[in-house]
Length: 301
Picture 1 (cartoon, rainbow, N blue to C red):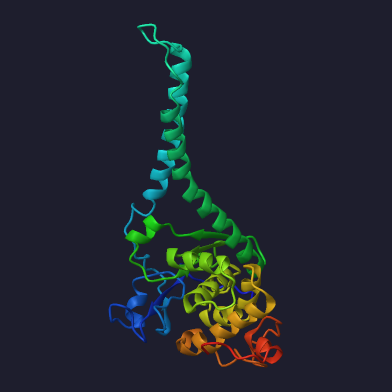
Picture 2 (cartoon, rainbow, N blue to C red; picture 1 turned 135 degrees about the vertical axis):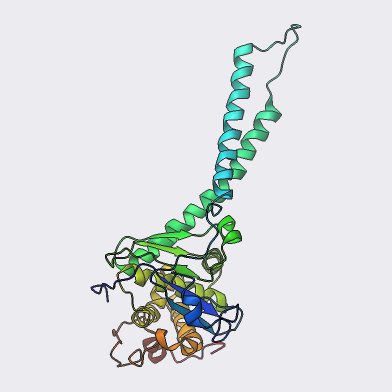
């Protein structure tokens, strides 16, 4: 898997709502609109990724994707500098005004500015921390150093693409080692990480799979059939790296394998992706190995 290199300029798009996209177009029609790879779902609706468009740009509004992030950074910096300025002015001008009256330290102003700076900085810290954690997981799955970029809320508010995640590929057929995960999936991954992981929602176990799927792409696998089969055999590994117990990780892998994988389109499924099949890597984390080792029923399957 890791040794394969496929020529492609961009990843593929996720299209859901039965066999059609949200706008009613067929997968072939929507392929011309996106170069992103990913999986997505709404409630219990079948997941239907689209095909790869080799020369179509991603559908997004240019120039507005990161407005809030930089704005918060400027607010944090300006507030901190404002606090320094107020303290400096108080020290330089002395502690008495022009009438000789004692001027107290501008505590309220300084504290307010520092609190505003901290509030503006906090979302960015959480965002980078989550990206770092997910990047460590993706690196372990891909076998190479991988960065994960979580879409920001501001980007999501102007993004009209349907992909749940994607990996960019260069003209030489080599992928960037950056997995881009959309805002909703990153939120679901955070929910999963913060949960007891005993009973993941459909959105949560699909989000875990999206991370696995895109991580496999960063290793150099372009084929969606190969990527999907490799990913389902590593979902339990991803869940373990996200903090799940062995049993909960196996349950998550089985949930995706039994509930979602059968609903995938033909270009994401392969007859060899089964126990003893041509694509069976004999991994202890594969969902069929989990079935053989753990006979307890899977809720919702």
